[in-house]
Amino acid sequence: MSMTEAAAPPPPSNQQGLDIRPTPREEMNLYPLDTFPYEYAGREIRINFEMAEFTAICPFSDFPDFAVLRLEYVPHERCVELKSLKLYINSFREVKIFHEHVVNVILEDFVRACDPLAVELEGDFHVRGNIKTVVRASYKKQ
Image: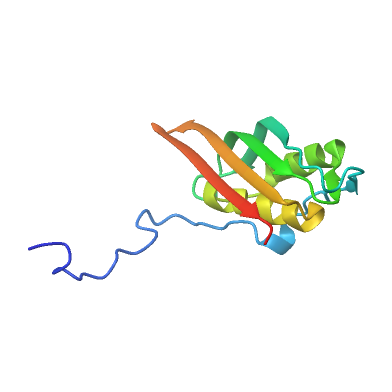
């Protein structure tokens, strides 16, 4: 029987019986991202950041997840202020969030704060349980 013929229902999402409770967005208490005017609006530059000490909490295990975050963006009229970016990234240390979600939260907050022309974000998570996870998300202004 082929996979297309067997239309079995999907298995339950939590077969381990764990208490999975990610931190709700409104309870994350993330440090705000500050910006400053980009004085060369119209001149395209690429700005790269590597944040080697990212930490959040796994909602399944309550163990810390570690990652290197790589962010590249093209500013439009505003640039992110580095100290606020550091404090924002560090504020995830007590947040329970999945790898796939944290990359999207950071991307959304960054776009909201800076209104860049383009952003590429990569979360390169350390090996855990013999599995390495890399999550990428991007944004391009229309």
